[in-house]
Image (cartoon, rainbow, N blue to C red):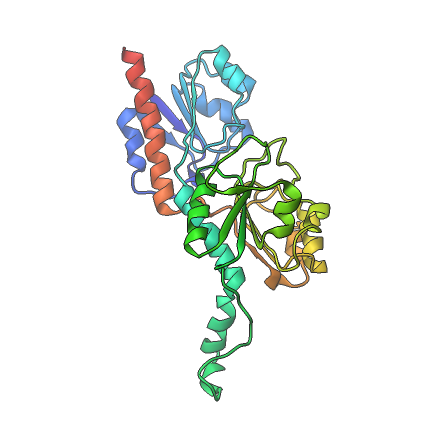
Length: 314
């Protein structure tokens, strides 16, 4: 089997990458621009892609193609109808990053809540050594215990976040954008009550017709002025222009954003121009990407290839 990995750079350096070589000759490309896709996969039996788009023309012109593996959960970068017409399975990977995203969510949240960089600098710059008491109250911080922790997207990741929030002593509630999630362990609220009563709002939903532009200016106005908003779901769920305005106007307290409408982030993104930069923490779509999560991801891609090959010999 000839295997082509079109965008290896999206998974980085991981210890088990050689797993793929068990199934054939692997050609690794760090990135692949659109004009190079067809040439690179023209003789491939198996193609692995994370974000490289495989459209109808590309799939139709890949005469040897037998399997498409997406090294991610979302498959919107593959024309699945075109693949189906040619009898080419499209296999994705699921539930490899729940622990990583949950940990990243709380990293963002605790950074915003506790302001460790301020206190770290206070000590390292010598200010603490000059004080006349044992402590310092320069920046206030708050506990998660007793706070209402609202989650949008109560799937594998959302439920992991919920368990950690409970361990901190928070009351977990959730909102189902589709209206179809009726998880009985936590209190389900309508959107207005959810937004107006939550102290923390953490987003872990996919981007779809129910969630697109869900958090806009009118809905930000419903939130408490002390609310902290975290988005580790998908860019496009939070309207970035409206969020920047809401933070500058003090409608909410702070926000931690890991995902953006355009990735990498546009230099003119309004979130980069917020007046008080302490109100926002920005990370480059990284909460999913612990070494363990990326290792598990490649393991799942390898399992998909093995399962496919076993089916071929039956």
